[in-house]
Image (tube, rainbow, N blue to C red; front, top):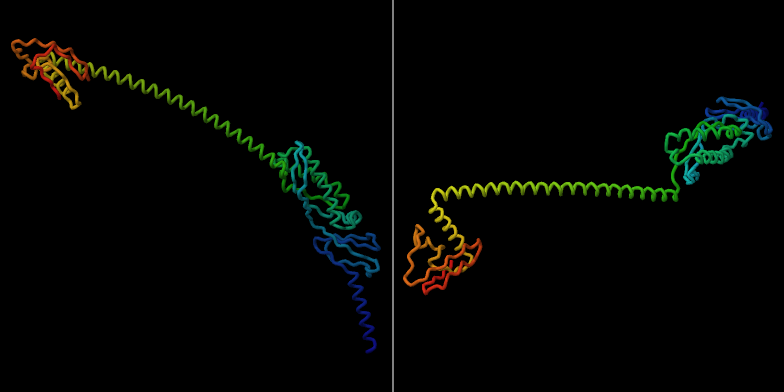
Length: 332
């Protein structure tokens, strides 16, 4: 019995090895391709435990596990030319999954790297075709969604030949190149400067209109004020003359006395003015008598020549006839 234990152990190990090599597990999100001597004999798309022929090292049966979930492929910094002739940089990605494992194995030997390399060229060409018939503004408008669907539809036949199904294509970024960005900036700057100049011109025009209207209103207001002031001044002068006339008619002697007092006051202000007058001139008639009567002239004295009325502000009165020795010099 003891001699049989090593033999039993060897047989058990061989059985366990055969079971291990004949069993494979397909997880959720995976699918398995069963190959026998390099040929596809079965494809398992549902998760679970499956069996195959043992001895994979003898190329009996091999299992290749591939993804069945949706995969993402990014394509960055694609230089595309739009209908206007300018170049732009585009970032895009697509979501795909392996829909036909047999075709996928036959086309790219089940390699996702090779499949994505082929998808890169096809996605690049589809983006160039879609952008080439549109302007830059289309990628920034509601037409963006239709552009992405068009790219997806163009990729689907090529992807189906690889055993792939394109779920969606998205454009992540559409940006100007460095050269186009500078040109666009210069154009926008020129447009803004032109707009600013137009606004300044309109402001200057409006300011000129406002200034002209204000100047006209100033002239009108000043003219109206002068008119009213002249009217008021004339009315005041008329009232003053009426008051003077009434006062003169009521008491002519007192009025003459009052006028003489005002003349004395104006003539004798401290202005440093010297007047040479004859003592018996009409200017001094109220100096000798309160009622303005002229005193009798001394015997042998020639009468003085009456002085002409001097205008307001005249500094020197009328010079009398050759005065006798009693001529008086008055200085205020």
